[in-house]
Length: 626
Image (cartoon, rainbow, N blue to C red):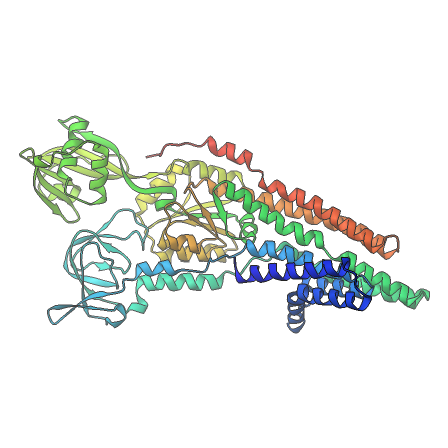
């Protein structure tokens, strides 16, 4: 529970207890009024402070102004309990909204994983462990297998496969050797690298990602609530009407000032939009509850409102539309059976920890006889050479086959082709690809059904990979070969075009875009902590089809909120007219308010109903698309 929430609950309880004492205790009029006054101040002082600040900034006509005038008016006409009750109702409504917004969201402490605490600095032929901040441009640093690269630089010695997924989002590790640039935050997974530093710690890629997230938070303002927007226009109208009601009849018709001032104050009390104050936050609270039942966590009603306005959805590819893991999608043998080709490749890859090797062994699925494998040698960036059952086996890419003079056939299948030769003779290839999530196609189709104009995909992969994946699931807008700054640049461009953008991602590299977009949506099951904390909405089971479901819930919630506004305002106008004409008492107005509030609350509960959406999701595919 936040400090604000605890203090608000305490104030409501204390003020409510004092209100009860003032109503039911056997007190004289002076003591009763004093109890009401204390209760009034305790319940309303935050409202009064905001009202005074609004006056200072010359923007007084908001809901705080209306609450202040209405509650003071109730005291002025001798209805002190109603004056306190007005403020208590308002505080309860604010409490509902506060609980739905920004709880512990700003923490980005998990991003420190991108930045190692120490660096292996090469100095005078020795390795010295030091802090990254102490390293200067031109220094040499050593990165061992499994270590995260601490600073941007250029490889001067060594060769290794580098996992760049945390920075670029690319699913396939890239080879890094002498002359290649490596980025901080990436992980060396195959060899030892000696790197000449090209940027200071504060200017490194990983540091810039963290800074971009912080800047993006500052660039995205909080969405205004329906009540605030409504009060901008409603408040000046009712205040002006009350002033005219108090002044015009006495001045023009010669009526009693006392009587018409009383009616004007009653008018203001009736005008207090308690039903709206309660029902609108409850509508969004109900929408959040309905979404949570679907495994969609919304961090605030303001984000639900913003999601209802989205017209463009941008997906990161790896780990969002795809599963982010390699899978054998086809085996193309020559002179061998598929099973035998897979067996030979799996045995040759027995000692390798490369993701491709892991996927081949997984596809083989049988126990490997370690004794039949010998002289295994990994050829960085190309493949592996090993002796299997006494035969020389090569397993690798086209470059490896070409270097060894082995003629091979390039498959038409999309994906990464792993070629196999035995004793210098080509035996076929195994095609490996990142699997598309089972419901990615449905997600794109459903997005169009809920009124989304454009769906785009961003990826750090090569253009051919991105275009194939996008074409497979029906996405027309594709941006490939991107770094994190490029991704956020595209989001910025879309925002500058006047679009309302939702960005969907799962990795640390997506965090800046998640934070900068109108609505950031993170995959919660496999997503990084940084992405989850930067996002406004979290999909707990990583199903892309939950994105259109969330939009559908958001639009339904907004629709119900608008229904509540129209209904409550219509009844309010009727009773304001009756009050101005003297046909309704304050007690009757309070009962009317309560009735409207109950009906609006019951209408808000409809946001919890998600059975139709659940049934539709049950009909989605349950197997991955290769």
